[in-house]
Image (cartoon, helix red, strand yellow):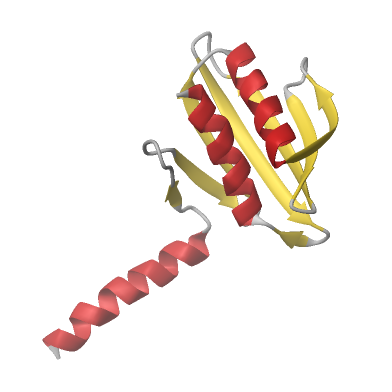
Length: 128
């Protein structure tokens, strides 16, 4: 009975965590880049960085991974196509020293979390 619980509880915990939509994602080749999933197609994180640095990083990442369709530096939004998915990057200044990077990716009606994560990690790695 105890052996069964040893395997059951971690599996149940992992299942509940993946369903909740609030999973911490850590992925990087240089270091840990933390963000959390808001929905099945959106990932965001808060960082101590300047808006201009984040904006340049987002532009560079979107141009490297795909192509930019629209950009508005005053609103802090970029719309791009990456891996045939529509990607929206939002950069919001929270304080003078902190900002939020939010990336959403969809292909038609379907979420593309892998694409959102790839763009998000690319932006944040350039910030560090």
